[in-house]
Length: 196
Ligand SMILES: [Zn+2]
Image (tube, rainbow, N blue to C red; front, side, top):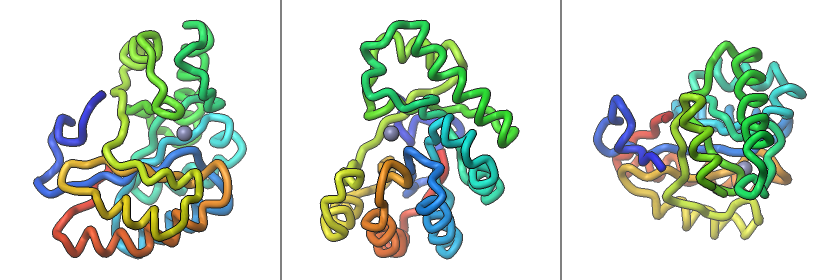
């Protein structure tokens, strides 16, 4: 798994990366994009291929705003680590062509659904020229543990960390509200948000 500080070129000192998974989503992605724009912050979106197909304009809004777009499989199978090679390849390749067809960007990074990695998933990620990415800070926002919990966990983020959040998969109002507070606070600590 590649760390933020191991990327090439390396990010500037005091960098932090916000990654946003499971979109695009017609309700939450625009709100998060607006919030990022308001703070002049770039993030990284790990999108699901079948949602890219459903919301191509919204997907282009992500890349047009200068955010990094990455592969998070075609259908988000949480059992991916146990799936046969052929099926894993299809999950990766379908999403890859979908994203590049819609945005003109060929994803350089891959995140497995639920962070479930297997030898096969890692081999295929490499075979298709992508770098595997996990996270350092997981506020479990997808489980809706409350704004205060998400905020507190995200504020543990420090230099070189990758933060995990979600704009898809359900009601993300807690995530949105937490980020509203967290982004300016982390910036005030001198951290710069970078896209992968
Ligand atoms: Zn996911």
